[in-house]
Length: 94
Image (cartoon, rainbow, N blue to C red):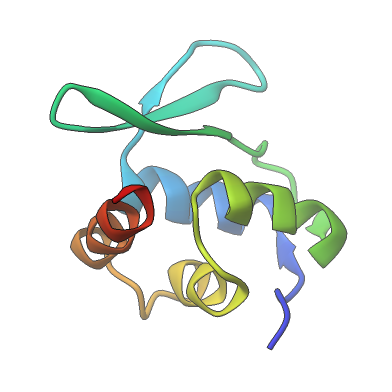
């Protein structure tokens, strides 16, 4: 399964709502994802545009979040919840 095409605002909303990264201010802010006090991942937060972000660009966000294609799709489609993401992230950094 490959990454589906999503609107930038859909990806942004899912990351902010479920992953809850600490955001660096700015139009194209970076999100910093911590487990405890340790920085585990950094991700570029997309804008709130309705512009479609195709797989070629979405794969960089998925890689930054340390998710495979299927789990990235689940994160955006709402079947992957925040706590489950952190479990996946913990396994990825182990």
